[in-house]
Image (tube, rainbow, N blue to C red):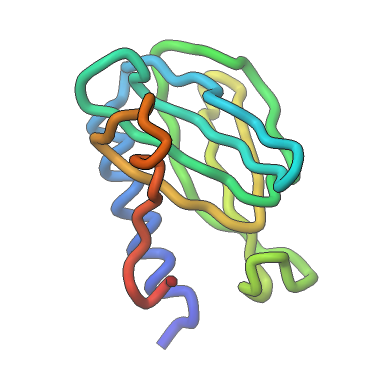
Length: 130
């Protein structure tokens, strides 16, 4: 079995949520220098939404707010072990149409939550990825 099969299923689920929110606004939510933590939100105002948190963010480039969003998440190979402990892989979130891309050692996401409530930024991950 592929060592990344569980991650790929989890990323596919995130992409399914993002496709359902296509056309809505996306924006940078926050960046914390202490842990190189980057947060991005789709539909920050109200209604269905999506939040991504990238830990040990190595790159974030592109517009800070755009509509319509066409984001996707995934992973790509690297030559060294990354901070998350996953060998050979880093995560990204990108919108090719908007010219946005962020890359990080670790990624978490949540959907349909209160973005204004810090306690709801608990990022969903399946048990096998915790």
